[in-house]
Length: 371
Image 1 (cartoon, one colour):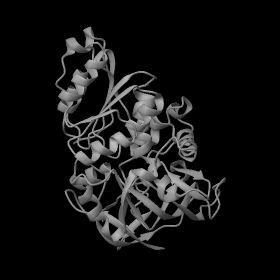
Image 2 (cartoon, one colour):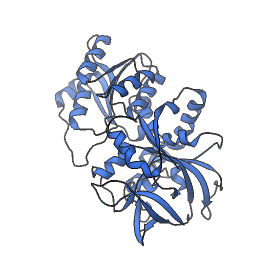
Image 3 (tube, one colour):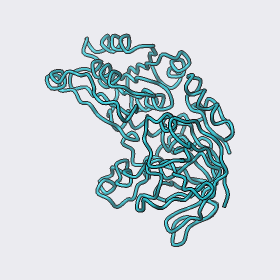
Image 4 (cartoon, one colour):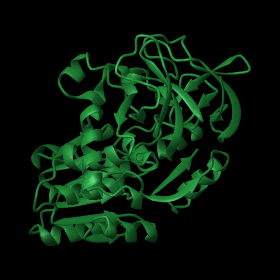
């Protein structure tokens, strides 16, 4: 069938709308009519070239939700009309990592940016004038219709608002999990969140939910600092030096129990600042991304060893999507998780470029494309 989607022809580049051909779902796949897609900084990293992809053109988007319109043969447990939220990381349920509950590290993640099916590097589902079009994370949520693996989809109640739940497939789970799973925040702690955009604002929510006594949000944008205070931060400042001093004032000069790095374009210097802000045996969690070619973190090996600090990477907030997305939905229903308030602006697909402009200029916590 034909669909319209936002593609990048080469990087650096900008998203443009194109008429695409979409294949029917095969075994283990579903075709979904998109309802909403979140605008994540990772999609911007693709357009800037910070993140290399397997081939161009590529249809963007990896955070979204929609309604199933077709089910592939021998694809059990799914029916037309089902509502689905996508996980940007597929979970096969069978590899070593899934078996241990580490679904975010599923072996299928190795093919996340190839744009093809993980079991066949020559298999595409989108094309443009006969030329294969890669799918971001095997999803391409910036398309009116998309064909995806059921390993990337979570069935949800039809009564729930997909335009809100779409955020659970990346931004919310990544930020929330960075605090709750990776930093292992517990009641009474002092936490620094460096960068409070679409990921960091949810790290603030997660830390608050876990019972942190002090949550210090750091961002140069006044709007984001003001927003952080509404999502559970106790302090909001523009720089790490001030955040570190505040943390030390609550910890007898020791420093924060954990610092979570969620800067949109993360560098080694950001990580070093966060690492220096934590106490002995503290944890520095890094979930922000930067250029794939940027290497090196200027931290002292002596400080790492003698202060027994922990530097922890965090992919999708160490989430297990088949368990954690339903859990986050329950928290949303109960009022313990804010989703509605995360959406600052909504856009039509044709206005997606404006959405990324607003992201760069710090106007949004999360922008959402509504179809």
